Amino acid sequence: MTTRVALVTGGTGGIGTAICKRLFDSGHKVATNYRNADKAIAWQTRMKEGGCEVALAKGDVSSPEEAEAMVREVERQLGPVDILVNNAGITRDGTFHKMTAQQWQEVINTNLNSVFNVTRPVIEGMRGRKWGRIVQISSINGQKGQYGQANYAAAKAGMHGFTISLAQENARFGVTVNTVSPGYIGTEMVMAVPEAVREKIVAQIPTGRLGTPEEIAYAVSFFLPEEAGWITGANLSANGGQYMGW
Ligand code: NDP
Image (cartoon, rainbow, N blue to C red; front, side):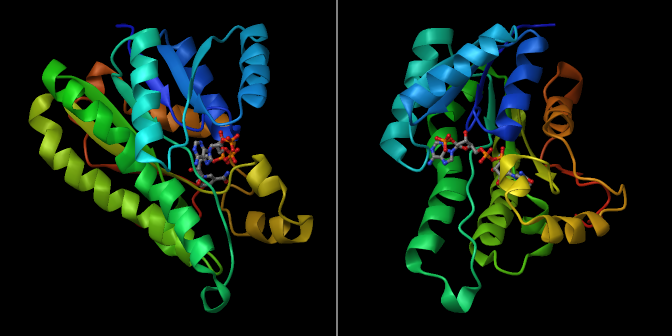
């Protein structure tokens, strides 16, 4: 297997940590971004103790300038980025008639504009080297909508439009672009939901349980090897059967 340089945004989070581990265990050189140095260094130390080395580069993905600087720092430490996983994301839930412009903008900036901000500085290099893998982490709620998440569902659905357009523009350059749409995963984001609400969510999942971050990391890894070179513009739903549409 060829060793590649992989940048996973939001790598310090629940799903991002599992993606970083999986990519490192597959033999890749892995980097992620951070905003808070103390928190990130503590995370990096824990990862190293667990046998996983991840390079850190400072950058808020909602800022075009910081995202570009972050990509350049990863290139400086590890070399040109071959694999990009656009994973960083947040929620700021609320029914739309009460939603503030700030709730809307924070979610669009972090989940969708970030995809422009981070992909733009890596795409020309991938095209020039005739190889690249870009994977967006979207959400089941971008496919089916979700009460109280007009901002989040709009951002996550937007990632699909981005994926299928970028896939068309870059297929001839050996760059594939795909999306993974997770259902409910047992990360802090979901475990923070009151238990009674979580029980109702689990009742809607045919597998009868929440997913694990490792199961999402597995879905991401599906798109990365040489054999996946003909798979582009795809959306892989990993949701325990909760939603079986596109
Ligand atoms: P976490 O909250 O555990 O992790 C989010 C990560 O994104 C953190 O590393 C966080 O860093 C980073 N991040 C957030 N905002 C920014 C920013 N502006 N700039 C840079 N980094 C940022 O979330 P999950 O692991 O649960 O989710 C990962 C992705 O999966 C998200 O896109 C989410 O929408 C999606 N998803 C999650 C599901 C779930 O059930 N958990 C279901 C479907 C999709 P920091 O520590 O600095 O905040």
